[in-house]
Image (cartoon, rainbow, N blue to C red):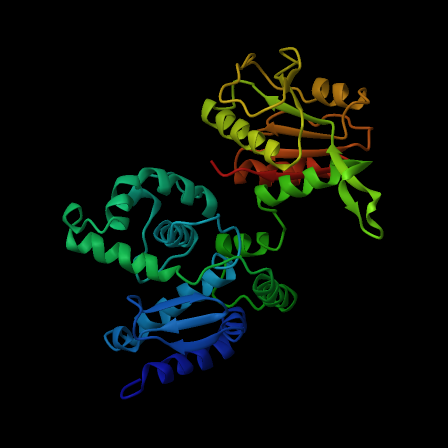
Length: 388
């Protein structure tokens, strides 16, 4: 494609995709193509735009340009720029986690960072890579954020700058995610996957299954079980008559039971992270949370938490059976909801009660297995997972 501008070269690639790559072409067309000479990378995406730097692309061969564009469109298809973004994210780590997730399932002519580069296991989820990288790279990230270039090589500083640029536009956007999902569904119906095959295709299809971010799922679950008691008060004006009549105030109360799997297969790190999340419930109207611990049976008396705890003594560490915890919940009139924290490694329990249950799994792989093998048999149950 000699003597063509960067935009014209991109257009030529899109024309080829129209014939050979229906999904890539469809998703490409959902985004505005914008030139941006200030970015330090060839392409970046977000906010329904694909931005490109013409100066960088001028040094790329046609094959390299197409490969870089394909990687960016695959990133969009996986919805990394629009879903499951943590609060106040580290932009560098977001980009690296996305790159590694893609390199796990897609052979590329342009080398992407790989899990082994960071001594990480392969085939983790986008969120799991983010959490592990954020911890492992703390020293390097601190030096970058403080502008301490002397602590980094010039090559390292440039690489981190590029990764920051790559995800600068990323933000939660459910409308964008739905637009992308529509293109994926179209590819499913017409078998219009093009060169996207195997594990990458499976992962893309799996993104259509809603795996709610655990923070939102917990918040939604909490909201559904909170009840309010209305009482009259002189401290608040009546909406219609002002202070001449008593106002009303809603006092929130709930009966929440948390059952924690303390079997030997649950790591201490996982237990610590889950209890730290339970502590946050006290910020949102929870007056008391009852906690039971179980492995093959309930291993300790009920622990009633009335404020956040920094330490909780764990007992048990044997095998796993969900039935005792579920039976305890079903036979009690004190609780409106149950949250079970587990790795899902147990036989399917019998559930006859229609009381709400939220299952919180310890990883994406366990969540996928649980949703496939166990969740369909559990009435009034929802599931999510915490990336560790």
